[in-house]
Length: 292
Image (cartoon, rainbow, N blue to C red):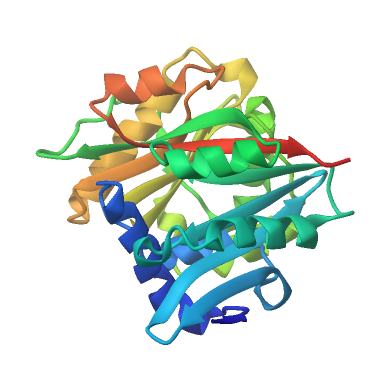
């Protein structure tokens, strides 16, 4: 086998590998190149990624990222190559790459992947958090409430948008703030960047709530962030932004909309999404290990 870093040129092959793995667990196959751009956008792929190939093509892929004291590892083995020790090899590579850089390591697994659970637990990881991918198929155009008034982002307000988003997500599990310039460069470099899909609600001259959306993610429209600052929660702002987002996607001919949510969200986000017709489509687990 050959092991090498992967780059954007390999995204089509990597997306196919990831999709084949998802399909083996009877999960909806919606992975595309824009999803890989998002997931690897802050990783140093030249030094912190691995694509394993045999004579028939890619059989496994992995990469890492690190922010603050937490490192994240992702590793996926193609169904035709499972049981050959490649999963353990990818975990080992991610741990060695993160050695001395972080205090904790997070690894991701599909919720029903019992082999991945056994592997992580054998290496000292614990089941730390569960996340849902939720989806809705829009059969008709939703009607957002007339109030509150919802605005589309003007790019000169991007810094204020970022500040509101960052403040709102302070309650999110393992949130790690990014400075505006780094965050804005990352967002603008994404192939799904479209500020006409970024919405906000203003109250008293301040941005109280925001939604950052993307087309062509996860097989349709994607709600990348939905956030209400603490002082404005409980006023229906998140629901209004969500319905406005659905209507905008519908008007653009996009009828599938998805998002990711912490299953233990302290703001009860899962219940909100269910109230507008979304359902849990898949579950993922974060496994954590202390390393320092």
